[in-house]
Image (tube, rainbow, N blue to C red; front, side):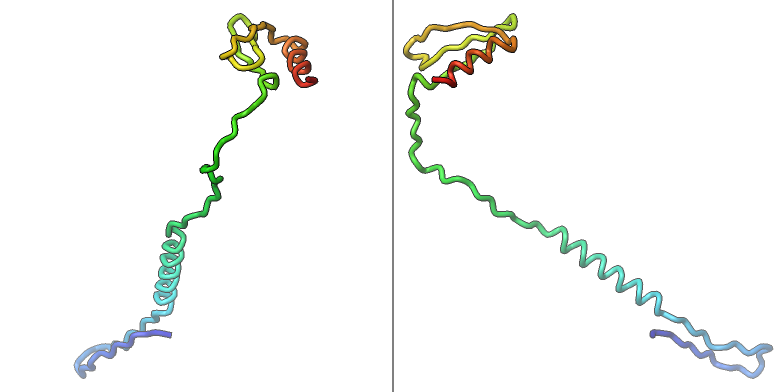
Length: 115
């Protein structure tokens, strides 16, 4: 493919005849193309790409009207106790207490769900 030939001048008084040097540059050309391909590929991968994100439209008015009988607020208390109340705290609801056992908090939640 690519080669370099160098011819030496012949002098009659030399003892031995030096032949011309022939260098094959095909592996060097192949290596050059491999390096070019590698660097083009890696620079194509490093370009930053932005991704479109779909976000909700938050300019609508928020409707926070929830019936007070539908609300159950559960608070974790010390000594493995749970404190809960129904309705809004502004109306000073009665605060009730239960525990972490399987039947205790589950019964409260099942009663609230059945309403």
